[in-house]
Image (cartoon, rainbow, N blue to C red; front, side, top):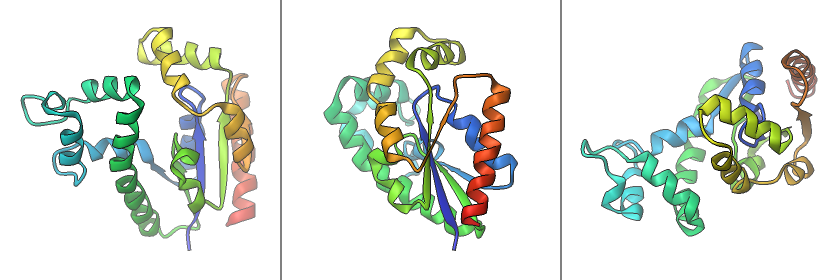
Length: 198
């Protein structure tokens, strides 16, 4: 049976760097965000429900989802965000479980920004929270996404606080030093987890 390592962290924390390191070590990584993006494609079972929720403005002229419009609405309205999550999260979980079963490996990593909020951590043998100061996260995302600091700050404020992630996670790792140091700490943590779980 494949054992699952859940990895979470706020935007700009370095979560993707850690999961990429897992992948480089030969562990399958299953990305919840990538699966969630497929939930808003016309062939998805979630598509009609999502469009019905947001109305005709959520449709582009070519019949695909107007993702920019949907994103703006969910960040402004908690009730819409919760309703969309109620549509998308069960679909994502089903697909993540299917991919985990198909990988037939000793370990799989679930890359899930909302790991604890969705309850997906219940399926994990252990969890890792990648932590980083808010100001450093904002600076990274401003450069990475070519956006402004206020927009990033708004996204961070809608996410779980690092203090809570740290309390809930089996392991924590900080990403506030150099990339070399973070990669070395990541490798050490990956080796520890593989010894404990494989």
